[in-house]
Length: 67
Image 1 (tube, rainbow, N blue to C red):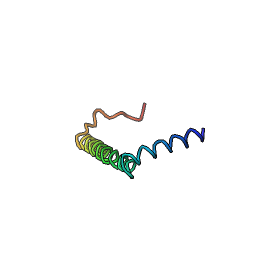
Image 2 (image 1 turned 90 degrees about the vertical axis):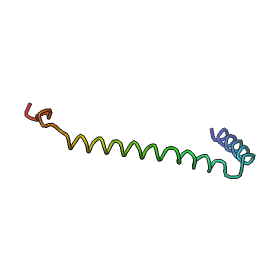
Image 3 (image 1 turned 180 degrees about the horizontal axis):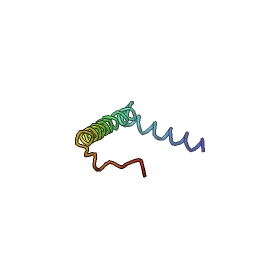
Image 4 (image 1 turned 90 degrees about the horizontal axis):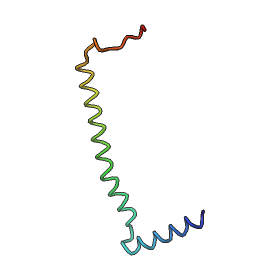
């Protein structure tokens, strides 16, 4: 198992040297630049939906805990 990981790392390292010295770092930076705004947008939308639900909540649809 360790040998296959070592070979894979060496293979990737040689491929990154051909593409540029820091290709892996740029790939991770690009991925974070895409993922972080998407996660932030989803979080903001969830927060807004929860706030609107709380503001417009109709108590007649509330479940009672007495059952």
